[in-house]
Image 1 (cartoon, rainbow, N blue to C red):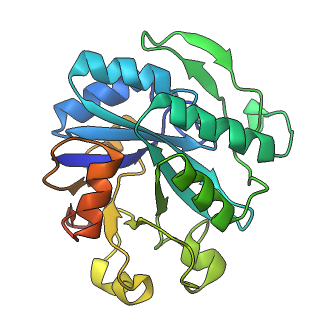
Image 2: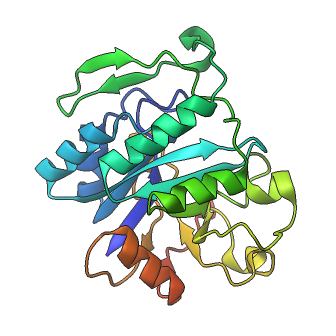
Length: 243
């Protein structure tokens, strides 16, 4: 099964407005991706639309958000159900600074349905850090039976290694994510035995399907992914050498 656990919808202020959940699901299916997770910044409010869009396309889906910790580390928190992802969203919203988004500066944040209709504009500024530590976010994710993954560890900003330098050993990551151009061997010594995934981190439709992870899964679930990660049975696509 080929999957991508890090795709942004139009709810993320940095993503293209073409990234409606319906378009994401259709594009992923057309490009040979079997399962996806929507991982918007600090929110999962477009996951109900993703669930319906994936049902229509016959595509497997998980439900996620990319939380920015107090240390400004980006973290994927991935769940089996929309309800779990929305519970995580409520917890994160309580920890966000209550600032109103300025779309002319930071970008629009539309909450949409599976028919591409805007239901609401998210007023909270999602492009900010939550007042929760990395460890607190991991504990909450696991309490909700989710996967806890360090985002794009090779990047010079908003990554675990850019912000914190070295593993302390108590982070309890289920995996670490490599960006599309990252060389696996260059990061293995820093990650130790923590398994890798590779994701597109797509912010526009053209980026969906350019890289992926894959594994033999009986179902596209958190439990099956955790089993495959623990068994070192997740394979990642070759890195891109150019955009």
